[in-house]
Image (cartoon, rainbow, N blue to C red; front, side, top):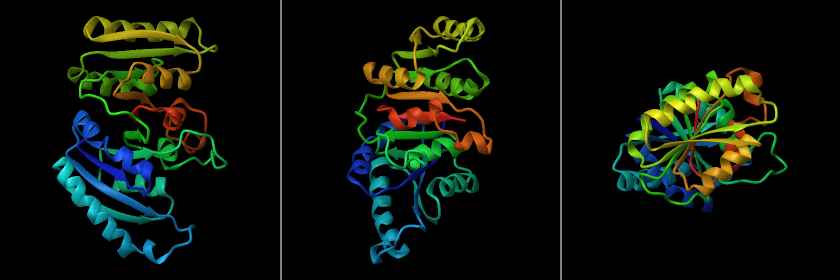
Amino acid sequence: MLKHCILTVGYSEEWERAFDLLPEVVARLGITQITLAFVVELHRRRRLEDSDDAIRGRLQKLQQQLRDKLGLPVELHIGHGFPASEVSSLASKIKADGIIAINRSHSVTRDSFMGNVAVNLARVARVPLIIIPSDAQPRSADSPLLFGTDGSEAARNAEKFFERLLGETAKSYIVWVKSDHDDDHDEERVRPILHRFEETYGQVEARRITGDSTEKLASFGEQEEVGLIIIGKRGHTPLADLMAGSTAEGLARKARNPLLIVP
C-alpha cells in the first residue's frame, strides 16, 4: 500500500519508545522499503558531534537495527534546512509513497504556532503521513481502525485507504463528528457514506458524535484502543499549509494512537 516510506529520525528517549511501534505500522500499511532521513537545522548551533560524518555514523547503526528488526531494505539521507520542507521535498524527489514521523509532544508550547516536525509535516506533506505518538500503546495486528469523515471531497482519498485496510481487522469504526456549525445538508452528505460501510462491511460500526472533531476523535481512538486513526487533509494552498486549527493538525498534536493523514 505505502511501499516506500521516509522515516524521520530524531535522537530522544521519546523517539526510541516510538521506534518499538514501527513493526506494527510497517505490517499494517504494507511498507517494504524505508529511507531514514535526518535534517540538520541550519539555524541551530552545531557541535562536533553534529557533523555530517558523525550523524551518518549514528544513522548507519540505526540502519542496521532497522534491517535486522524489520527485514527491509533501508537507505539513508542527510539534509540541511527546515525539517518538514526538506522531508517533503525528499519525498517528491525519491517518489516515496509516504512519510513516517514521531510526535513527542502533546502540549501547547511557546512555539505552538510553528509546531514540531510532525505537526509541520501535517501542514505541508503532499503524500500520506503516518504519525506515531511517543506514548502510543502497542496494539495487535487486527486492532480496530478509526476513519473520521465529514463526507467532503477532502476525505475521499482517506476513505479509499480505510476501505483497503478493512480486510485485516476484526472490527473498525467510521465516525462523523457533528459540530455546532453543521446543518441538515452536512447530514445528507455524510449519511450515505456511513450507511454504505455498515451495509458492505459487517465489521464496521458507524458513529455520529457531537462536539469538537479533534477532541472527540482523539478520545474515541483512546477509548476503543484503535490501532490506526485515518483522516483526510484539506487543501494544498500556501494558506492552507500555514493555517493552524485544522482537524488534521489538531490530531497530529493530540492523538495518542498512530495516525494516518491522507492528502
